[in-house]
Length: 135
Image (cartoon, rainbow, N blue to C red; front, side):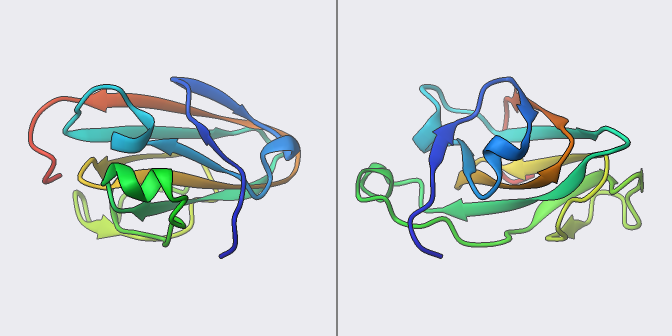
């Protein structure tokens, strides 16, 4: 993956075609404080077309400074995945997210969310969870 637009994720973000192909960053490189895990809640609208992929890179500051690429998808803990309760509750998954989902991502990575949106819009809500980073 070549250089793509990377921006710091807000607590809530409207996903539109303007974000298509860009990466929203949370985690050590995109946060001023330490957290144990990130809870991501994605919501689709009926006419939206797109997906999210959870990406990761080293949390070392040099990785962000040198624009090391995010790689992935990386595993996360699925709670509610693509419109249904997780098939394996609290199991790890690396599926591309295409429908409404709630997932936990370990904060021992610099976490990125790759946005793909070709039509419509949706929302992504981000919550930092305190505690161990081993989700």
